[in-house]
Length: 264
Image 1: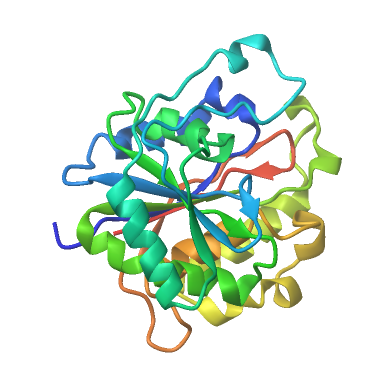
Image 2: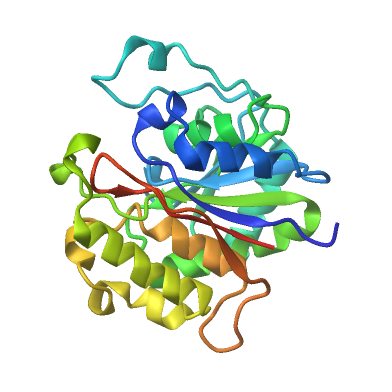
């Protein structure tokens, strides 16, 4: 295998772990064909730090970093091993790219990582480690972060940007009340740009996309998409190294688009 695929996964609400829907089933199908993948690297908005931290835990715990959900959710575990060697390699690549970086041997897997991985690789048989998002990360920085990590693909590391295509928690509604049109319109705009490999356009989504401020009152759940695009080589000039395809496009809770992509 010359290089691993890249995924952007909308991880939705923590209940995605118990209610897989269309996306969960498609992730499971994808996960059955990960031969040659030696480790999974996840960038999630649920780990934000000063500078960049890289998970170096040998056996990361499963963090239930949420509240007010059904008890069965808190009983779930994702007992994947960590991967110290790749964590060290990732930290070196990030440092070479100009990031302030350190290793963290105590951090566990947040729900932005383990919830989608429960569907992608339910046996937890591939080592997993995370790279944090700096508090100061913006669109340009997210692309740079992804580009810095890209060489790991040739070493057998699957890079996953785990975020959310839309993330306005103030407007969550029961599914029976229907979908918010703005969520579907924003996701459709992003899809067109992703499939066209329009990296510069996506980096300027805050100004160009319809309903951008409403779909993302804050940016942290959109930025993992740009990390994934950066890791795929997209730079707005030379294009990316692989075409994107849509994994799923359902909307949950009326406003949370689960639109997700795979490259290669």
